[in-house]
Image 1: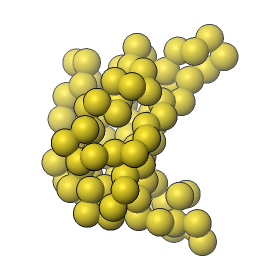
Image 2: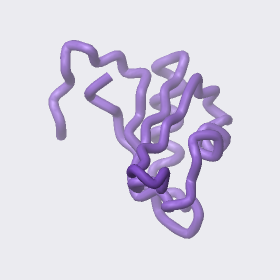
Image 3: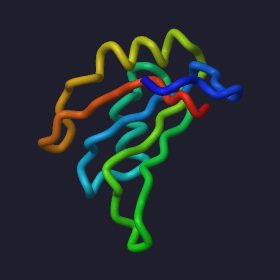
Image 4: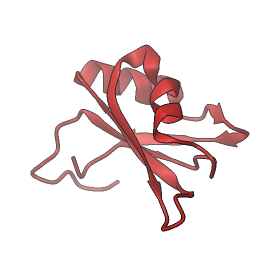
Length: 88
């Protein structure tokens, strides 16, 4: 697994295998049971999803709970992968 950087907070998750049509607000809604503070889907120059994004939480407990519960679930017909975002 990646090594945490000095900026590692334990509050951000890296989410991959997202549907191409997924938006920031849809990703935020998907993780809403764990009270995320923000979500960002990375896009290409045409604003199409690159298939991954990050979700940030207010607490470590929220991030850990979401990671445990949401990894392997289906979003828009795709099974997503969720892990700690070691860059933030």
